[in-house]
Amino acid sequence: MQATLSEQEVIRREKLVELRSLGIDPYPAPSYKITHTAVQIKQGYSEETKEEYKEISLAGRIMSRRDMGKANFAVLQDETGTIQIYIKRDEICPGEDKSMFDTVWKKLLDLGDIIGIKGYGFITKTGETSVHVESFTLLTKALHPLPSVKEKDGEVFNEVTDLEFKYRQRYADLIVNPSVRDTFTRITKMKNAIRTFLNDRGGLEVDTPVLQSIPGGALARPFITHHNALDIPLYLRIANELYLKRLIVGGFPWVYEFSRNFRNEGMDRTHNPEFTILEFYVAYKDYLWMMDTTEKMLEETAIATNGVSTSVIDGVEIDFKAPYKRISIYDAIHEHTGYDISQMDEAGLRDVCKALHIQVDATMGKGKLVDEIFGGKCEKHYVQPTFIIDYPVEMSPLTKKHREKEGLVERFELIINGKEIANAYSELNDPIDQRERFEEQLKNMERGDDEAMFIDNDFLRALEYGMPPTAGIGIGIERLAMLLTGNVSIQDVLFFPQMRPENVA
RNA sequence: GGUUCUGUAGCUCAGCUGGUAGAGCAAAUGACUCUUAAUCAUUGGGUCCAGGGUUCGAAUCCCUGCGGGACCA
Image (cartoon, rainbow, N blue to C red; front, side, top):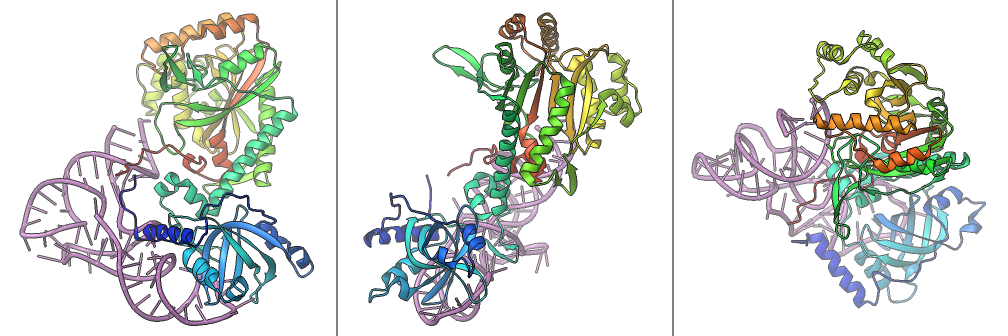
């Protein structure tokens, strides 16, 4: 696979051979006992507590070395951070044979190698808490040289900034850039906070099919694959909505799923072909309840993730503290374009689009036109969390008709920093109405809209059994993660963003 | 998909209007028993993304392709 090895890679392979010839296994099998982490020692060690740090062991990667001849300093990095270690020749090798220090430690170990050390805590003359090494064990030899990043007083030198390197070799990015690790641990905290919020209220986390014979629940182009045994096409899900609603029909009052979805569309800094939407559905609730719940959940989630209800992205401070502003989509459009489109037909909307220089095509129906106007002229103005509510029925095929406003549905989108973060509604549970909406979608499909929905007869049958009034929501997890961690690119909140395959020559 | 920027050592980058490659870190060898971007000395390391073209001569100019970023649809 690898055509040629660099000089440094060749040297490391030679060291591997030499280690083995000395009887040292560069990839030993036994567990290594760890008593402390780097941060525990740095935070816990003091003159008063030194007795507790007399016999400690930790393991990590060698990140830098300062060779003073018969004594060396090195920096060891574990999952919590870094700590300086101090190693003296005559302590490691008290007898005549100095090879463990002179050969193994100084010559055969490299930056990036993973070692275990036993020793005791102490503070250097310059005041840095360190570990005095009494013995060390090679735990894993690294054959690939690590980028040599240095740091002083918080300033980073030779930082790896090449995005291609970071995304393709995330493992190396994680080793070398502590802030990347921090981003991802905060994302996990964020997801845990959401789970806690939902579980505490009776939510049941469930799994539903990723492979679907009818890709439903959203307007998007699916990936298609083929099942050999059944000899049928299958689609990777674009949403899990219709399955979660089936479970509401089945009697669960509150279900949720972090749904990995797949959409065969363009990629940019807010779109990856696979991404996660948290969807949850709650029986006997409506979209007004859902707004109250969502803002509460996001406030708690922000605090769990960042310690405060705010985060800063692109120099803008976002405050997730509830409650959020609510405005109808027609009022939003009126406010930002001056046009009152609430009573307009399709022709009128086309005229408005023309006047606003919004490109439209013949396949677009009334709903899509409203969507274009809002997306093009209004969305960007909503920086702090804002619920946009009461959408026209044409763009919401799974949403219950508004309880009082003709032609509208009970739906909201949550806009933060000018982008859609969540989409929710009082779920349509009238099976006859639902069938008509699907048939409407079929017409859009015939008109050339390749994102229109298929008719899912099994889902309609489920509705015919009776689905209680239900509120449902989908929240873009990566987008929320971007907001809460201050990253502007989806690639920075996915461990392994989609990339073109590398050409391995 | 369009426009534009970009690709040089393991990493970060320099290389002017064309004369066939340079620094720091990393690596190797040596010195140094409290250093911390350790220091000092010596040395090695490159299909300059790929393929064409222009030219006596291309990392450099032109074209095509590939990878990556940004903006737009």
